[in-house]
Image (cartoon, rainbow, N blue to C red; front, top):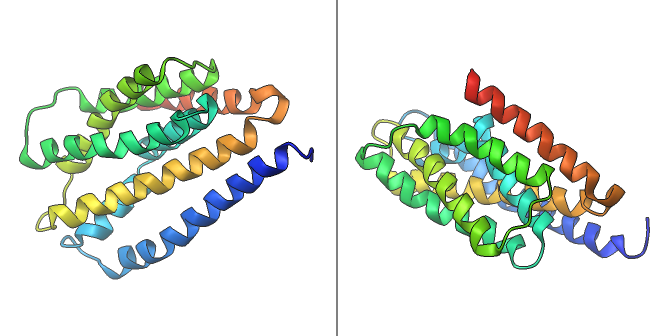
Length: 201
């Protein structure tokens, strides 16, 4: 391992440790709070058990790490914030046609962005993820379990989303220096292919 890559990998290890530490009490709560009334538990489990949500959120972190600079944190912070707005729309039942297509497209577009190492202006990247965050948030809100507390449910899915982002950032920080970033780009291609599956299934 080169000396220049050690700080990056150390940072990645720190991020993964942080994600694990934060996840422990949340996972415990998710298992304790069972049944349809489990607002926090249901919200926390939804992004983790839905592969379409997981891949998109992972890709946001991976893309942010690939872009570098402020995008490392601005993309993962913006996504869950905008997702909450979509969640509110889903909870109150506002019409949002094509949301499932939007979710599949989010995986494809983010995967391609990583695969081609696309680095737009930060505002452009934020606009892209904001549109897709609305789709994912709406899906979370629309699937709010009966009798679940909306606030607890939202806290659960926002926390899980943040943890997935951290994992994506950590993986990106590890892979980006290897083979000139080709491993990260290859992973982006795999994510895009998975998105095609969700689009046509």
